[in-house]
Length: 177
Image (cartoon, rainbow, N blue to C red):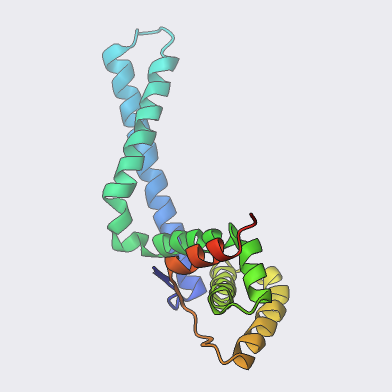
């Protein structure tokens, strides 16, 4: 389950820039260290050591993947980036079944209505966090129309949580064939 939490856009962007810089510096240092070490241990002085340099970079990429999952992911300085990734991931899960969500909304299915409301709220927050004001106009009109439909049906419009079961329910109910 994912829950939309309030974030200040400026703070979010500042923190994600900082975490990106930290990760880039660690990767560069690791790649340089491992490439130099590979050339020093396995290379030929004055020879073509491209494959050892490349091997060091590849090992650095693999080491960074492990570091990201095992260590960096849980660090406080990564919180904004992790939140953004989880929000985008949640929105993508809904996007992948949007034709079924749309069919459910047309049928006034409460679960589909909740999913679309979460999608609108999450997308609005993602635009706000990324400072993407150009996409907010058309989204706001669509979200407001959907909000009015939900209110007319007496449905809860505060959908800040994405329940994974909602996606499966809508997917099964409105699958073609």
